Structure formats: C-alpha cells, structure tokens
Figure 1 (tube, rainbow, N blue to C red):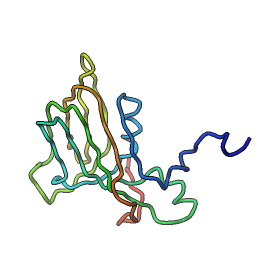
Figure 2 (figure 1 turned 135 degrees about the vertical axis):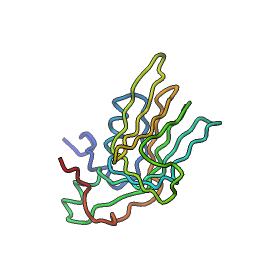
Figure 3 (figure 1 turned 90 degrees about the horizontal axis):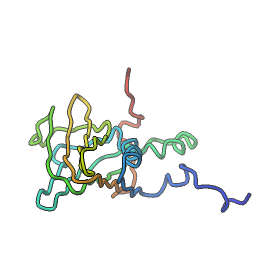
Length: 162
C-alpha cells in the first residue's frame, strides 16, 4: 500500500495551525480535548451581545503535538488560539470576577447540555470551581490557532493530580 492510500494520522497535522468547528457533541468533545489546560486572562473574554458572538483568546497547550515532542525529545508547546461561539443568547459566569484584569483562568473542559429545538447550554469548566455558561440557539463552536506555536513557559506537560 502506498503512502497516498493510507489514512491520515493524527501526528501528520501536528505542525499545521488548527481550525476546527463543532456543530454536535461529538465534534465538541474533540475541541474540548484540545483546549484542556488552556490559560487566558479574564480580560480576554469577549461577548458581543448584538452579534451574539462569544470569544476567548487562549494560550492553548498543543496536545496534538505531544507524540512528536516526545519522539524528538523537544520542549512542549503552546499556541494562541481563538475559541468562538456563535448564536449566544446569554452569558453567565461563576467562581471568578470577570472585571479582574490580572486574573488568569485555566480551561478544563467544554460540554453541551441540549434543550428543545437545538437550543442548549454550553458549559466551560474552569480550574478552581469557576465556570462560564453560554445559552445558545444552536451549537456552533470554532477553534482557530492564530499564532505560531511557542515553547511552553513552564516547559512541562500539564498534570491533574488525583
């Protein structure tokens, strides 16, 4: 079998910037895994109520690059990415002060709780018992890398002690 006849491998895309969309729960699980342990200042939370768009500028850990980093024994990386959500009707937060410009938050996961007619609630779970809840008309989430990857300042893979 020639290389052109083989399926693409996850590692093959490790050097390319990500641009992913989620319109169902299965897609959202992929984006959730990729944004796990992303950090962002509270000042990088934006909600445009008139255009019903919510966005975060994240410093995302590049989980998709881990196999290559380990294989080549090089430092782990982060990349700045925009996580945007369309058709947002309402935004709520808990566990942190949205106005605190010095506060840095860590994103743990994304999940969607469906309601009637495709509407629902997108939940962004943050470290330290914080959360952001978006009431959405439909699930429409985009994750896009907007800078080149850089060496993670800590030079360590995020860990979650049990």
